Amino acid sequence: MGRIVLLLTVLLLPAFYLHAQSTEDSVKAAVNLLFEGMNNSDGVLVQKAFADSAILQTIAVNKGGKTTIKNVPVQSFAETVSKQDKGECD
Image (cartoon, rainbow, N blue to C red; front, side, top):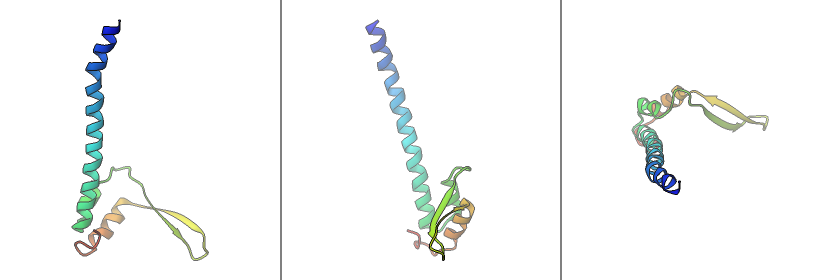
């Protein structure tokens, strides 16, 4: 019984490690894509960095002194980035 558990552990451990690696690599790729898009003022790259279900939020204090949270569509953020001079969002 102990040999079976050891064998399963040896066989399954690399699979868990590879899955973690690919998830980490995917996140890094998305972040790098976002920063590349922002650095180059490329709204298309910025949009590609986000999932379709992404939610961006802005926290601000209004004129009355109340803290508010506002949802911002990824499209609006990408448009804002694309209007900046290259390197301005770096």
